[in-house]
View (tube, rainbow, N blue to C red):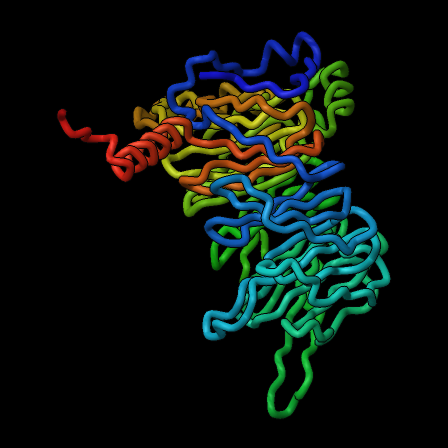
Length: 460
């Protein structure tokens, strides 16, 4: 397979780190993305991609511009201008199923302390909300209630007509960094190291107005929460700057399981290792999650970890999946995973099962996986008597997409239309399935020849 390179490549992080990085050769049989389209419209870092429908997506970043693209052809459809500073959050607000006349809306928050509301079909700015006291850092849509929430120094609740229904008092100068919807008309908000549960009170015959009530503050994290995601209807997960992964019950907000890389050094950890850990604090920051019905996939520093919900332990990892911090991950069909990083690479992985004797247990903590904890031999003696096997997995590199010359901020997976990536190099790349695209071109050529009568020329 061709390895595409535009304007340069990844810079090595040092001989030791480079040697530890898993590599793959030119023959990438499981990597379908052998063609690409480079899309240029932005003049600064492109940080956000949001899917609008099966054929369109929007991009936004530090130039304050939002661009709507055709995911199939790479054509630029609309360019939305109105913000004066960088975009800080983007989310689509789909129309109600029962209201065919409603347009697909796009909400964009900016460092200019405004939120823009756009019609994705016409590119028209429907309204510019300017009543914020601080930058809105996150947006979320509660489709069931047909409302959207803005998170900054306070939490605001808005309807489709852009009316402010209610808001909290000032929460924090640092502001809300992430929001997820949980059962019972509740939302969980990450504010520094705190997780705050809010309940929305909808109007009734007695209470005519909306209200939002702070229900509980959870202080189980030791440091700032960087990532927050729903697992299913009954649970959600949070990850912190110091490598704490906490799984929460979405109904009573109690911790159901935890995986920590942060604890006091053990006697086996010498001074040199301790200093190295302190210098590499970003190596244990949990930057992003994606989940399925069985596992949580976590981007931890430069590594990827697979945490099994039933076993409540890590079953697979790549300690050095990238040269630099991983910013975004997502699960694909067929047990595949994609990651992108500050190193400018987009990498494809496959989760493969393997059998391991129970006498050789997989380390349960990220910390142990880095070699900082040894399984006590005496403690593992009883386990050796058990001959049953334990199913574990491995993460195998199956594709390496090199096209960006700087940090890849995030990506979108568009099934048959390919993969879209955005970067600090101001570019968007639409990666295409080369075999499929070749088939489409051949079919079009066949149809054109048939229409022109050149396919079956008459014999003279």
